[in-house]
Length: 485
Image 1 (cartoon, rainbow, N blue to C red):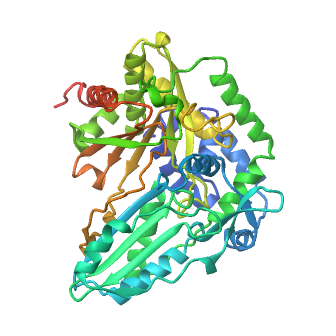
Image 2: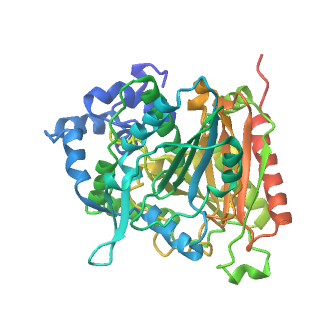
């Protein structure tokens, strides 16, 4: 925190002193050998309580031992996974939750046999990619690590013209149940090698992409791969539901957000609003009018993170569009603060709420302070899924704000791939309205804002007006600050 020790007491709250998610990770890295994680910092917050946690720690099985035990068990689906299945069943023959699809072409400098071995090693290093989802005898949806379910990736010899014809047929729906949630193919022609990658969101979130692609490059270099503790994560999530903290977290959310009629997205303007089964995806991507230095200056001036700025822009926009004061959105928490989570691939993200009473906010600084506090408190109490109970896909879900960093497959840069664009005949929206703030290569290529919506709920004109106002508000938050010499 860059403060003198004399300024901090053992009962001061880390986040009230100016801590944020990035600083919590820096602190956790210094405390890792002590057995504390970023999640502990969010949960306990003071020197006094963190010291008490250390005093009470008991000898437990190692993470490696726990992971081997949990890989042999079946695990319940997380609330987010259940919501995804509910949405997917609204249009089964669609790719609404195909998380990310890539098709790369490599030149002769890349060894195709070596790359194929690296791909096989990387995907087998992550249990989430080999989880079979099925109904157990009690008709409960469960998932179990089934490594034999993943087929071996092999080089398929084919002419370039044949691959070009095949390209637009590669993306297709997944079965979801009793079937792999990952589809990987490699092709070899006389001139090039190719890698096609597609995964269902049930198996992997956006934060996982860099971990998996980094593993492919590590394996290609012949370097060892880090252990993945995804099954331990699933077990810890289920255990948390039986602890007192889960009830405490539930009470926090109900006290914080209960009793209000929150406006959580713009009012749909199409007559097909009641025909929810007619799912049409539409989207727009624009370059944001600022660069990495602008964003860093705004973060410093406003004493917050870029995630909070994106949430603030969304809340301001929804307030202005709706004319209402009780405004709520959700934001995507990547949920990788535990010791088992930092190197784990899987669907681990959580939707957390931010609700602001705009008639009680007097200026931007107060708005940002309230959002920052709710973000920290939301992570602290994230064992309970506020949006899950009573949710109805497309009808009751809130607008989603998602900060994505480095999803341009930059991990492959040293192999100099060319990314081929693919057609998708099965596209469908995974949410009624989603705003993505996308950062690639740490802002060297600028920033993008993508809005995606259900085209049966909103007209394109309405969403483009909404998005234009969002970008304008975001620009003001970043660029409307004093210039320093």
